Image 1: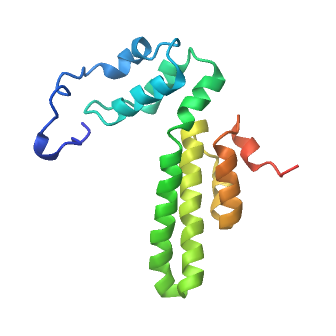
Image 2: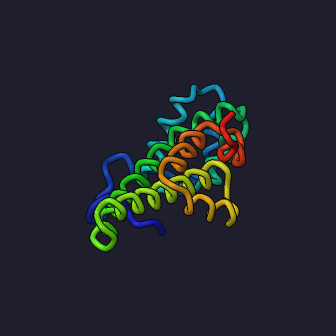
Length: 166
């Protein structure tokens, strides 16, 4: 069972009635007639509730939508991964800065945090990232990783993220 998001087991009024079978009911809730922002709002609400809904259940519920609509909806959930990676990079850079010298440590931490964010985003959008690609990401510099992060937000498939610029 997932830990409660509410202090001392207190659930805000109205939330206690959330159905335990919510993941199975998503198809009935996320009907294709809804606009993208309505679906995003519903998914954001569900995400903070006491009933866990995994990525597979969401993807299954969004399956009747066109791939463009699915990508637009799921793209709204990518930005937190990118920001989390940036924060991790800053923290790691500060920690390693004391060992390697301030500038070198900061760059290393930023690259590692950005690489972590990119891998999480790619896994969220495309599924497991092959180990050779993962190694390439973690061996790259911050500028390259940030370029890939930008591309990953809109790329229709995994390998398009890493194509050379034309």
